[in-house]
Image (cartoon, rainbow, N blue to C red; front, side):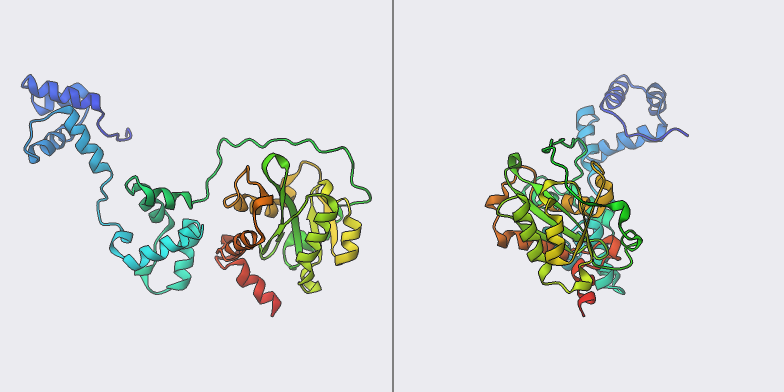
Amino acid sequence: MPKYSRLSISEREEISIGLGKGLSKRDIAQLIVRHPSTVGREIKRSEVAGCQYRAVYAQKIATKLVHIPRKPRKLDQNQKLKDIVQKFLELKWSPAQIAKRLKMLYPVDMNMQISHESIYSYLYVLPRGRLREDLVRCLRRAHIHRRKRKTLRRSCPIQDYISIEERPAEVADRIIPGHWEGDLIMGHNNGSAMGTLVERTTRMTFLVKLKEKDTVSVRIAFGKEFKRLPQELKRSLTYDHGQEMAEHKLFTKDTNIQVYFAHPHSPWERGTNENTNDLVRQFFPKGTDFSKVTLRETKKVQELLNNRPRKVLEFFTPNEVFSELLR
């Protein structure tokens, strides 16, 4: 059976011409290869409106009807639910995270639950305006046409590093917490940077404000972030071959955290960190000058990320899961 498609403007023009010639609905249907009932319903819409059938006017009616839901939308009927959904959207939560979190908050109240598809649908049928723009901007965008820019680094290989191939199996299994991944997010023209550290099991994220992106500054700044944690939650750090980690031996001596290096040009070996960097870019897009981002702004975004429910954590937040480990 062929897939149904809506009448086009050219088909509506044929209907208008056919009516002008005095053709029957069945004859018109044969001309445009449509079912007679389809033509009948099309003509009846104009009759109900009290107008003679005209193709342009009929097209306007059809376009308007497409955007009218067959039944009232749940968010239009439930102001309390609408307010909560909007609040979470403003916190940069995805519709899937919101939907799962509402099920946790209101497990028996179906009026306070909604699917992520319904949230998306509601957002994109909102009339054009500031509210729609603000809410849609809160969604995480997939950069379909994004092309990663290859940056050439100085050919100064890191000395005496331990490869990811020698990393204990417990790290890959994500059973034991305390294993981290790290990286730098580069700012405008690579003139500034922000450090990112993420724990592989809980997805707990630290955003590190850097004065400079040289190896000494990175080693000291990363060491300060880990200093507050108990030793059982700082077992290893997996990093790429960035020169900022050239003092990895001194870093290990200061923190007692063993550093393992992924293979060059293999970001999937640090997939948790790569995904986290993508989340951070939602707040600090490419071109950001991190030298102008304050420590307060940095930690505010860190808190927003760690208070987001995550699918991989069964929609608990990294803060909630990490806090359990600290008890």
